Image (cartoon, rainbow, N blue to C red):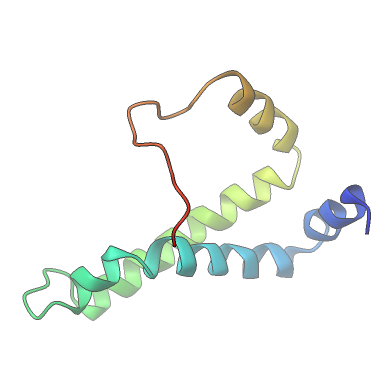
Length: 96
């Protein structure tokens, strides 16, 4: 499959974008140290608060995915080529 076909399948399908947003939120946010904090018996996050947080994360991720695979995708990539939006953060690294 050509790259353009691949991106158009995502760009033109709201269901795929929604599912991608949930997958990103789960794999990149929920299944991290956050889950360990939440599972701790002394956690300051209740189950209700954790659910509210995850709904917010999924919604923000969906908004970003929609922009990235929509009309702002090229602009986002150009901005990333030219500058780091959060240079004060540590550089990401691949998990083992």
